[in-house]
Each structure stands twice: as C-alpha cells, then as structure tokens.
Image 1 (tube, one colour):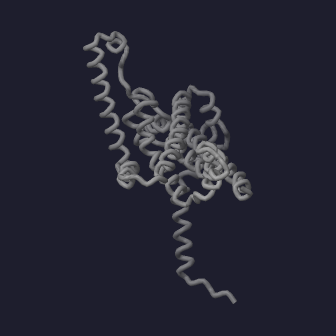
Image 2 (image 1 turned 135 degrees about the horizontal axis):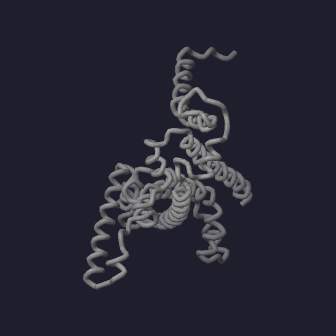
Length: 291
C-alpha cells in the first residue's frame, strides 16, 4: 500500500503553484489582454474579444512603429547567432588542445556574465566615442573630406551593438561547447583518421554530425538572447533602436493594448523558434544513434 503523503507535500505543492503563477502570470495576462476589443484598455475587465490590435500593429501607423526596429533586431540576431555558433565551435576545438593560460583565457571569456549589463554597454559606448574622436582627428589631420563632412559616429547596430550582444551570447555558447567537448570521445575521430580521412573530412563527417544538436542549442541561445537584449543595447546603438529599445521607449506613452499585441507576437516568435529547435534535435537523435 502506498504511504500517505505528508502535509508538507501539499504545502510545498501550493508554494510551487504560486511560484508558477508569479513566473508566468504576467505573460498570460499580456497574452489575454492583447485580444481586447477595439474599445478595450490595458487592464481587466476585457471589453470584447478581437484581433483588432494585431491588425493595427500589422498595418502600421499606430503608436508603436515597429517595422524598421523589428527588421533591425532580426538581422542583428541572425548575425549574432552565426558568429556565436562559429566562434564557440572554433574555441571548443582549440580548448581540446591543452595550452598555457587556457584557464585564465576561459575566465576572461566568461567574465562579462558577472559584470552588470548596463556597465558593459557604457564601457563599449565610451570605447566607440574615443574611436570616433580618433577617426575625426585623423580625418582632420589628413584632410579627408569624407570623414570631415560625412562621418558622424561608428556607433551602430552592427558595430558597437554587435560587440555588446556578443559579450552576452558568446559566454553561453562557449560554456556549452566546452561541456560538449569535455565529454566527446576522440576514438571516433581516431578511427576516421586511421581510415585515411583528412582533418577536414574528420570534422565534416564525424565531429560535426555528433555535435550538431548542441549547435542548434547554441544557435537558439545566440538568437534569443540578442533578440531580447535591452540593457546592453541601451548605450551602443547610436540613432537606431532595436525592437526591445523601441518597446521600452513606448511603454511610457502607449495607452492601448497595441503594445501587448507586439509582446504576444514577439513571444510567439521566440516560442516558435524553440519548437523548431526541439523538432530538429528530435529528428537528429535517431540518426546519431544509428551512427
């Protein structure tokens, strides 16, 4: 006979349910309120149910102008994702070979995780302002007209913004790849080399297929962390806002559920990306087992 659960079980279960409500309650509330009727507001009770605010958001011209910011954020997140995967794999391969200073280099690479994001953003912005001054000084000294008349600042999404986002995504990618390669059995690579495979062929046909599911995880980390990042973007984007910055700027002026519709749409995109990643990983598992 099964023993009766102690009273503490139900107390802890109740606390866990409260924790889940605290964690997901705001997201669920925003999801529900984004389907307010045309006369609805930012709070309950709902006044009708419709997709009015999504239609208004899609049509543009409302209080939240998202088109350019969304495209900019999407392009930046894609670039960050590709660079995060590439650099993480290369670093993981390099750290498989023991070399002097590897531990110190690892700590330096992941140190940005413990530095406040706003401090990182301010530091990168300061560096690029110093770079701006240097470029303008060189342009004035050399008489370069393009620099003197056309150059404003090197700050931008794909310069300083890209660097700021990589300080956030790369440590996660590096930690994942280091963990993967620490458990990687080199016997498979040795067998391929014994059969005459070149280093590139060994990597292409043996190493890469075995680590591919983990690369999908790194890619998801790189894309979603960049897509949602606000604090590290706040000082480094120059005159061009990303989508999270646009959202933050509009939260003080938007007085209708259009901003909730945007939050629901972007969250849905992130969830869809995660589902695609899980499907790809699931499809890869049988192949890896057969291999």
